[in-house]
Length: 171
Image (cartoon, rainbow, N blue to C red):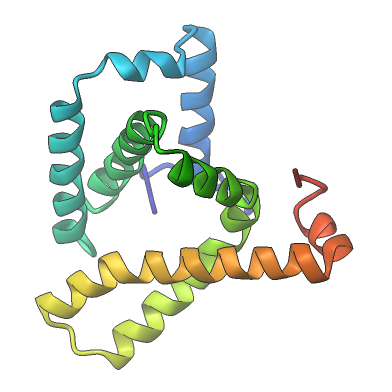
C-alpha cells in the first residue's frame, strides 16, 4: 500500500507504517481512548465500513487505490473493535481469547503469504467480477486460518522456536 507519494528513503520504513506510527502518536498526544469508539453510533460505522470496502475493491490498481485501502484499514479497525468488545456469549468470547494469543504471530506471518497467494490465484483463476469478489474475501480468511494453524502448531510442538520467532511474546 502506498499511502502518500512520499519517499522515506529508508528500506525498512514503509510509508503506511509511518502513517500508522503517527496515528498512534496522535492518539497518545490527544488522550484518545478506545472507549471513545463506543460513542460512535453503530449504523454509521457499519455503513462507513461497507462503503470503504466497496471503494477499496473497485479502486484496486488505480491511481487512487491507496486512499480507500487506507480508509478501509482504519474504519475496519474501528468496526471490529466496536463490535468485538460487545460480545457477551461466553463460548465466542473464549474462542476469541484463545485466538488472540496468536495475534502477533498472525501479524508477522500474514503479509508475505497474503501477497503470494493473491498473486498466484490471480494468475490461475479467471479475472471475472465473481472470482475477484471471492478472492477479495476468501484469501484473507484462508491466510488467517493458515497463519493461526501454523502458530498453534509451532507453539505446541516447537515452543522454543515459536518464542524466538515472536520475540517471546506468548501468553
